Length: 148
Image (cartoon, rainbow, N blue to C red):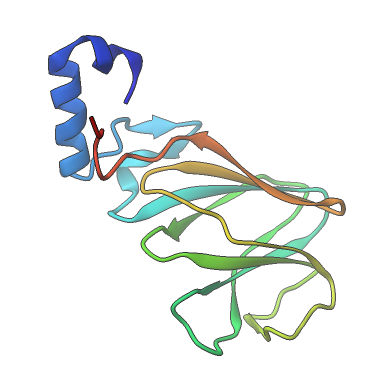
C-alpha cells in the first residue's frame, strides 16, 4: 500500500476494494494499458543489445519444451503479457526464432531465470551478452492485502 493509504482509512479501504476486485489501480503506466490486463497477468518490457528469443516453461509441466514468448531486438523496445498464476522458468537465447526448444539445448543460451512476478506488475527484462536481470517498474497488487 502507499503512504497516503497508511494515513487515511478511506484510501486504505479503496486500495483493499481494488485488490478484491482485481483492479490495477491505474489506467496507464509508462504507455502500457493497465486496465487491459486480466486477473493473474503482468507486463514484461524487453530491452536487449542483440537479437534474442525469450522462452518459458511452466514449473507445472513435466518434460515440456521451452516455448517462445517473444523475440526481442535492440532496435525496438518490446512488451508482452505474462501469466503470473504459475511460476515459470525462462531462458534467453541469442538469435533464437524456433517456436519450441529442448530443455537440453544450451546453444546460444545467455541466461536462465525464475522470476517471481505478481498480478498487475510491470517488469523490465534486460538481456545482454553479460547476462540478464529483471527489474520491477511497478509493484504488483497485493492480492493478500496488508497483514497486521
